[in-house]
Image 1: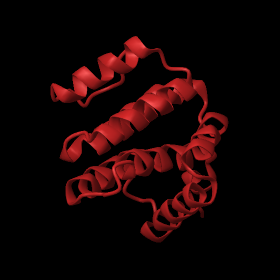
Image 2 (image 1 turned 90 degrees about the vertical axis):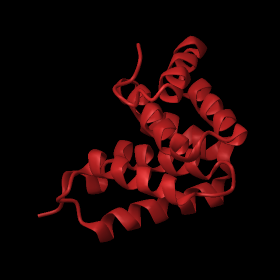
Image 3 (image 1 turned 180 degrees about the horizontal axis):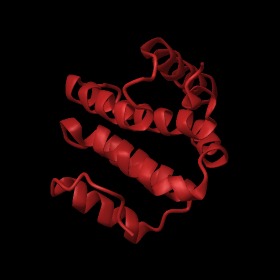
Length: 140
């Protein structure tokens, strides 16, 4: 039996968003890889096949490469339901922040937030909370 997340476009978008923010500065550090691993575990669970997860990550990276960041971000808008956008963005921010937030990562975070329709005040609060060590649920 196939895990339900294998074909969930929103779950793929959440995973891709984590990779996008972590790679926005041109480097994915060991700390970001560790945070990404934790985030992916919370998104898909322990029973999710590692090979399938690797295929999803590779597929999202291929989309990023083919489309470029701006067009890729627009696919996130189409694939992420509004009810999941804040949590997805917050989770991706925590991954990118694992080694400190580079200016390019913050810029990408803000650009994605705008495309997803998340208010600037909310993104500022998210940034403040993650910088303060609060990785918990998204701010309202």
